Length: 627
Image (tube, rainbow, N blue to C red; front, side):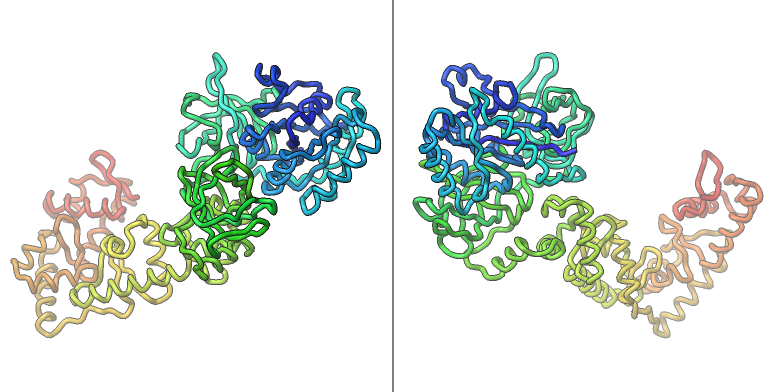
């Protein structure tokens, strides 16, 4: 079912609140001050049902210049707008500013409602309509229908409702599979229930008992109950005006402008790369380091503007800008915003976020401009490739790229598959990196191993953990294993157990070392099961003998742990005897194994503990079974 939010816009005292009462039968001015002064100060919310059965949420936004901030908060999440113009006054300053704001927020559907139509004669009314059409040229409302109404007599109200129903069919369905995101526009408490936040759910869905996060402070919030249009619901869906009762969070921990969203779905940022379009009637251009007010969602943040293609952006022009924020923000690529001058506060422009987590840029950097063009207009896989180029060292996940791009999970996965098929991206379990970074990893692994071989000619290779610490410590063991397996399959390296070496590396003994190796082999074979020596006992403290012995480990020598070693053939025989015995009897004790191989209790304990570490056996109390 479609969930539609319709908002009003227009100059103060042009009849927005009265119009909504005529449509719904409900009053949206609820504050005593609002009723006393006859103007909307805060946001008003109500709803009504269309003839087709669709339920429409209505946001009544204030028109007075002093309350533009509230108007911007209300405009966040609108699907359709009714631009309200009083027939007895026509287009006024706040009418124009509201049109500018709505255009920047990418609202595509709307109509003009000419209120107080019965207060003027036909000729005057026609003049007002002609003036409206002229003022709307070049805006998203240029071809909008103008409907005449009188909210007191209800003339034109049925026709307006029919038009709203007709236009509601043009509203696109919202994606409910994205991570939930709600821009908070009100926070209050209800006795016996605790903290309540309200806002329009712009993405995903929220259900009772969901665990969400309040950004930017990253406060954990559990959903206790949900109301949509005053009725309790188990789930709220994208496009619905929603009141959310959250537990374990105090009212003073939250403020309007915060975002209630799924965990790990948003990132904080102190900079934004954006395209800003300046309004034609702005009094002056946007210059380098101008202090402006950024309005995103329901939040206002002060920031400095850094035009990236020159020193300024003239009225009526657009360009790439980096905004350096004075507070952190959470947003997504593709989000819209409005900017107003710092003082006096007037709307000067707006635009769309291109990169929600950029690096600091220099002015007129051609590479930066080209990259922004790709991010702005490119296909999703081009955008993600550019992102991976700049963020491969952080090894982003699908969630990270969803948060960055604002795209849905399935679309991100499809784009990544395309990048992998084109050999532009590499996946490592749930992490991703650009192919160039993957190649650099390979070069670093090769460089590290060759240096190791140069200084350790008699060692088979490096331990995996030692190699990981020198190449990339950010990886977990499983992730690094996957990378090593990839390079092994490409013939770059070879892996033997926990040892990594270059594929073309072999330990080469000289004649004297061959004699030492033979002497070690003979010693260990003589030990058999009767003795399990340590490396020190075999080498007798001789450094060169130790070098040869270390080179033999994994080939003809097994290391059992704590420095104990055994001839490989003897070890294999001890293992096979154990396996055969357990297969026949189901288990084995230390004493039974001692009798089986005819060795001491101490030696058997060393051997059995080695089998446990190598996951051949599992100890259960004083017995062992096969893993």
